[in-house]
Structures are given as C-alpha cells and as structure tokens.
Image (cartoon, rainbow, N blue to C red; front, side):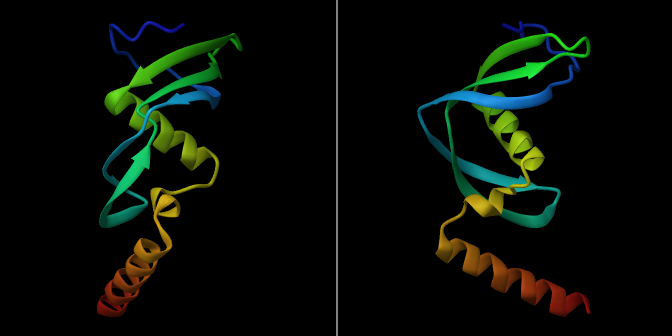
Length: 106
C-alpha cells in the first residue's frame, strides 16, 4: 500500500481500479468540457493498482475527493469523460447546451 499521509506528487503508471465500494453522487466538471458541471455517480472508495517509476507494482486505497479524482483521471486514460457517465436524458441536455454555446461563439 502507498502511504498518502504526507501528500506528494507521485506517478501512477498504468493504473487500474481493482475494486470499488459504495456509491456517491456529486457535482463534477472537467477542463476538457469547460463551463459544464453535472452530478455523477462514482464509487465512494476505490483500490487502485499501478506501477511506480521503478516499475514496481503497488496498490492504494482512497475515499472522498482522492477516490473521485482517481476515478476521473483513470477514466481519461481509458478515453472516457464524465459526460459519458450521464443518463441519456442528461447527455441530450448537454448536447443542446454545447450546440448553443458553439453557435454563440461562431
């Protein structure tokens, strides 16, 4: 396990979520989709397996904001944005808002 008691900048090479517990719904946004936020359901607690700079495999467990951030960033590595996790109705609303915003800037 990685000790996160003293936060530092550390790489997670090829991270994967190996287990999830619980669920929490919270407002989420992303710089990839500016000016748009929506409530997204995420796991409340995650266990992630990754490699460090030396290639050694390690695991870390996280909850709260760290769990949310890990899920969000690992989604990016897998080609998923938070909007991909929205219901079909919310995706439709997002598309309309995006079209309107693009029309206003054109």
